[in-house]
Length: 333
Image (cartoon, rainbow, N blue to C red; front, side, top):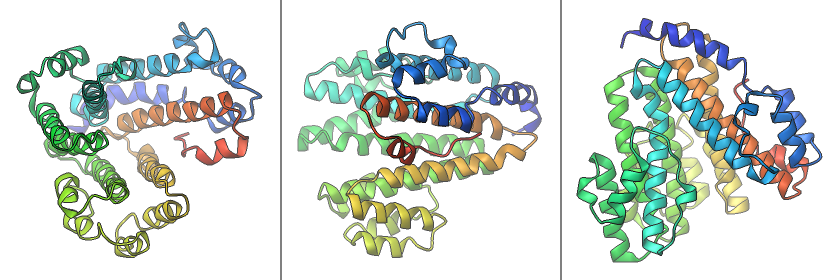
């Protein structure tokens, strides 16, 4: 990959990075008396440009959705290698597949949960799923849908949809990673696969599924060997901590699983996994050429949107400041 081809895009990214919310702005939002005041603070930032449909504070998702769409449209336009952007946009395509399948199986319309991002037309995917034309769906999307449909017909368990579809999503990401053949994107995808596999392991244990199901859905391609993860499916969380203590994620695993033992929730593990990837992104600030800063900007914006969502949900539900602060991820700025 010719790293010099990103030079023009990086000059724009450096400008865009200056518009990211800094820690002082985030702290102001946390300390704001209510959700309306958070919206007022955001109106002082570039979010003002996507507030057209925000009539009240509870409409904040309209703003966040519009901002995410704007960012991806902009980065797709700037980035000379579209697969760099696809590394992050692909998850939205498979999110939509999960939403559409759950709607089909449960006889409900979840169209409001669809995210119109990525290289595939959501409406076209919906039409093919609704009409059972699964074979007309491209590559891994078609495989994911057929595998999920077959599993649901056999088990009638919609909880398994996410795990099955995620497997095919990561297979596609591994294909993109191989085509890019670049060390930084290798690190990012490996971290995403490993963190998802560990969370999947916990979900399988919680659902009482065994090694056979783990063998089907644990994704190969990360730093942690698939066979290692499958072999510890029946171990206690304490033993899993020990068995994974020699991986690059030893601290994330230890602290995240200790949180899981204490709360029966993977929320802390998810937060620590996000922070681990953010640390990789921050390290790329010093890279002069290449796609690193483009990926870092996308991840920074996605994290920023996640932080705003956590704060808004907290304010609308009268959650204490210290609890909101505890739930927040590390920011890029």
